Image (cartoon, rainbow, N blue to C red):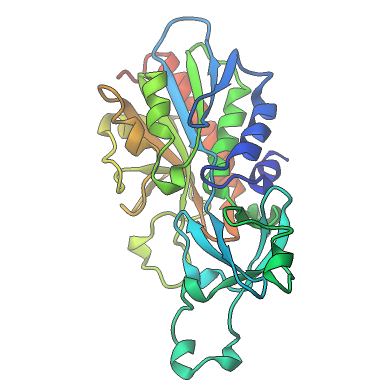
Length: 341
């Protein structure tokens, strides 16, 4: 299954080689031209059958992850974040390290040995270690080197009613939507950009958009769903099962109202459920794309994702499938002249 292949592939920011190859194998038969730029972005072109506005669809390949920073004398591994991760969710999580996917588990001093005040506070990163079962630094160095990257070991699984859990739905779910779209035929000239290093500052998207020079851009993301205990109903960002989420504003951009209104019309005309992303927290590749060269008409459609940036994330398969449908309807509308830059 596509979502399983994508989410289980390894692709930390700056180390997207494996996921890029997986995506290439999925799309190579459906595009007119595919290449990788200096940054590592994977760019695929479908020329269409007639002139029209050039549309860029973009989703990032990278995932939040960890990097080994040093190795203790007893063989335990110190590490740092790559991307935004809450230290409180790391305890006892299994990981895979380096090209050989060396298994490890994140651990710390057990609560039995903690002072009462320590038990009331999150364990700081400097007190966490990855244990690969080595008994000395020399033994650990046979398998792992400082600078190796680690990803969470969560596997894809469909659970409950039309739900799926895995690591890296942010943003492999956006990549999956793009791949399913690539397999369809459109009259428009389309460019599909699978970008790198989004999680550490939207670094791949700027050079990508500068190179492609699109007239219109649509960014596809996995975004935070906050329909869980402890969130205020009217302040929820998005919720699972309510449809694709349209962004109004976030930390990287205020989205173009013409684009938003057009996407709402497309959804309503097509009977596709949708929701608005009710938070300004976080950013995405649109923050760089809309600023490229003289500016680009850009918007964002996201698949709500529970427990985002965590070892196990969850989506609604209905939201995923409705996002695929919404993207197709959007591109059909652009074919008919429904949105111009």
